[in-house]
Length: 348
Image (cartoon, rainbow, N blue to C red):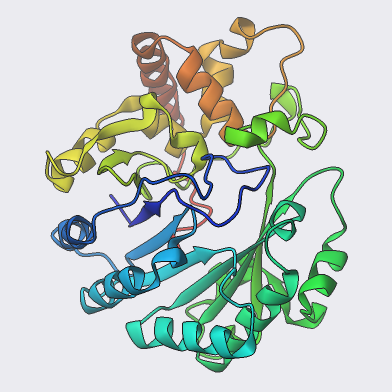
């Protein structure tokens, strides 16, 4: 079942970060039509109801289109969805502009604000912007998140937090939020919840050979994927992909186009795909081992994390062969009575 949608509202960005997996830049023009985007929200609302259904707006830099995004946040809120915007904080250049932007987002109904931090971002955005944005979000009652992109040559996290001006005592791992979000005594506004993601060899990140740490397949963390099928992504042209990770921006993950087919039909197509089911239940690393993918790779092949394994397996294996292997792995899974392990059950 679809738990939420990730809207890649635009691929335009004020920055040209070296790690960007989708090649965003000021020169990109791909942007959703606002009317079509509102229709996509309505399509999500027509699916069977579930609690905590969420919509995330990302890109690119979605807040280059502040009023359009606020229109969509307002629409999503009226439909009962939680909302998040992922942004690099370029707009928080002064206290006045920061407060005006955050208050505009709050009036629209935004529930979560996620800010990106890394050495790649600091080339284009002053880290102090993030500190101003986080402070303004707390004062307006918006849940605050920090998405830190790490690499082996990068600064320590304490240095990143110091540049932002974020006290270490406010920082909690995002897992803490997921575990306690429904506890009425948990003060989520008192914390900034951090997700740490390693730089990956996707998009411009493919050229960061000295920054991306890689491991042999047997050393890559093997866990079920909580994104695939649950949190698909929408490209600006209406194409729906089965996973909102940038590794999923490839043809084997494309399900169809929401302008041409109902979301319910695309959801059924995802649910009936044995490869996606196996990735959700046992994980891409497990499936890669079971399918013999390692034997097909070049000697000494290395992977940054399980999403990298997933992309290489999906793009480097015959689809019919991979489906057959996935059915076999699912049969063993069923015989063993293995539960579907969910790391997170919600997108936000």
